[in-house]
Length: 461
Image (cartoon, rainbow, N blue to C red; front, side):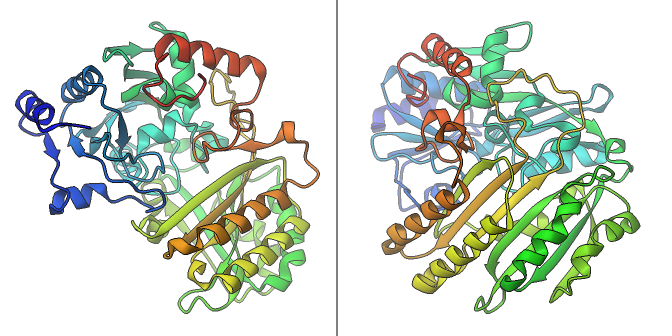
């Protein structure tokens, strides 16, 4: 626990822009404590908000010396950014920024920078990068955890685009990591960095908008809403879209409840086509021919990539995301999800905001090194199970149906081929999240070298 003496010592050491919050009833403490989800939320003895990289280093050194455990928080989306009274939260929201070097196709991202802030920094330079589907995601944890992205066909996953990093070790030392300095640690940061140290800064690769085929960073985004009984027809109509050799696409097939009254289950297809409006209309015509109850197709640019999903970024309530990798999916899988989702909202109306979806990407078209610890770069299909409810008494019901949904989609798959996204569900076996004996042995060796005491979790120990 952070004692008043330790907090006072830190307060006298850190720069004037930093803040230390220990009054649990104060508005600033309550605001900083908020997370995307209240699932597993704990209250720390203090929340420390460093204002500079040196402040972060001094804070970590002080906490290590006093044997006080800590966790990091940037966007507050991680289930693992919370800790009880025995520890403190390092909220990096006061240390952020993006420096863009468009001539070299590079950007340097600091501390608590959020996804939307990265997009807005890159947009004036007509540059894009791997980004996730939420404006409030922390850029650094997203990148070092792997980083699935709809731009994968053009840029690969986020971890593949890490060029260099600054990292505070379990000894409290700030080290620079690159191909020239600690290249093995750089490999580890590209997919497992959260388990090896505290990354204060990343240099990432960026790309000109022209890579998308236009200078506006534009893609065409569709919304096609169907009734659940049309699942077979929707699956058939999607096949030529997913298998197109001519056009690059990404998107989701979502099972959820229709707003505003949330009383009717629908099947929504949300494709993104990296092509002109006319080309996208032609490609998506099979969906239009089915007579959706609602449809729209409109352009969106990189700087506004996730704006339409801002409602999902609301803080509070109980939310969980489960993400598993797939070799593909079938209409039978989709029918199973429709049935399970219907069971969820009928037996637990509190979970009416929950949604199950299949996500896809056209396979990558670029040359890729594969030099990452992430190891899931070739996964093009994902199952996303998003639960959202208000009453903690419903934990068991929601978890049961979510587990059954995973089992249904994994039916017929050997357990050795199970894939779970690396950083969303750390409860899953490590062999689901990091594939291959050699990769795991290398990560264990890095953990033993850089964090043998398990300061940054006990993963790989």
